Amino acid sequence: MKQSSRLESFGKYDDVIYRIHDEFVNHPEKTYTLADLAQKANLSVGTFSSYFKQIYGKSPMEYVLDHKVKHSIIL
Image 1 (cartoon, rainbow, N blue to C red):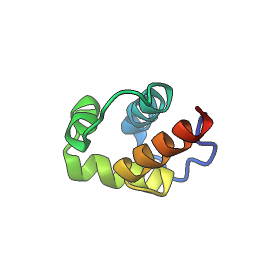
Image 2: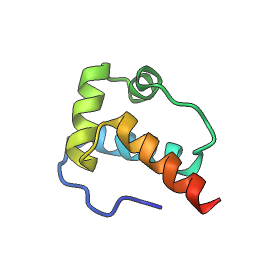
Image 3: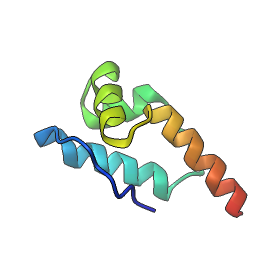
């Protein structure tokens, strides 16, 4: 399930943020921390969180939690 509305563009960070988003959407069974996600993007926690929220409308951890809840309901 991909997020269809990508609101902002951050140039070189777009692809890595989308890739990280797709990773936790496709693997909801894994545990993610904000620090882990930011490290994968090679960004600070604050910068990653800010970019992610501007693109997806929620903080990374809110988004991960919402996705896990939706996934568990489906199961």
